[in-house]
Amino acid sequence: MLENYQTSFLSNIKDIIGRHWLRRRPHLKILDMGCEPGGHQLKAIAELTSGEVFGINVPENFPSPEAITVAGDRVRMLRMDGMNLEFEDSTFDLVISANVIEHAPNPDRFISEAARVLKPDGLCFIETAPVWTSARGHHIMEMMVAENCPQETAFIDDGSVIPEWAHLNLSRDELERILAEKLQPETVQYILWYLYDSNDLCKQPWSSLSESFHRHFPHMHLMPRPLPGIDLSKMPADGREDYLVYGFKAVGRKRALGPVARRLYWRLRKLGL
Ligand SMILES: C[S@@+](CC[C@H](N)C(=O)[O-])C[C@H]1O[C@@H](n2cnc3c(N)ncnc32)[C@H](O)[C@@H]1O
Figure 1 (cartoon, rainbow, N blue to C red):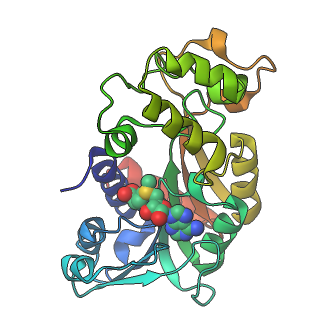
Figure 2: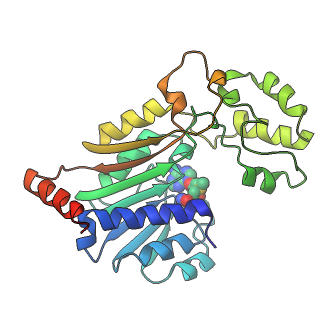
């Protein structure tokens, strides 16, 4: 029912609730920004609390009646833009989002909205990959090609078809020439359209996302993730640190734990509690 990356997000949420003070609140109010539209993931998130779960997304037909049924009674699905949330300040205990921020035209606004609707003692968890400036930041994934160009059999997203960082290093014509040697003409046009003409990606460097997180959350723990096995010789020549960050997990709070709470928190963690 859920893809691997969606199951992995779910297990991260479970982990987050289990490790932090949130687990002592049985009735969590959770917001998933850019949720899985079928309602399956929201249903699974609702099983982690006896509180309420809100899922927002932007398509015109969101939410579908089937998805509302799948998600169940404790889930509310609302058509809303993550950059302009229609919730009061300080509404949620936990604000989460997976694989959405790289699509938001204004990620800084997305992050500031996540911070605004979070309760002062709440927690925000945002994860995604790939970041635009990473080796595969073009975001052309195998399942996208399979869906949009079903006749294509030669596309594989391992850096051998679209060279790593080609979307930053090459002009449209240069990339078209490389792709035309390997892929069917419709696939080449689909890839060029997605990269150069569609507005699906926000195309911001990792450093700018990271700066926004730190600005909107006084207490932010960023865990950047590299992509193993990439060919560093293809990295853009200015060698910025941005290029090595493939994806990330971000855990943000608005208020720091006090010294006593922090000591207690670490002691409980040491004891495995
Ligand atoms: C790759 S999907 C990820 C969906 C889901 N979080 C998951 O992990 O399966 C990206 C989602 O972000 C949504 N999205 C894009 N821009 C958004 C915005 N500004 N506000 C809310 N959702 C947005 C898209 O409609 C799409 O459903």
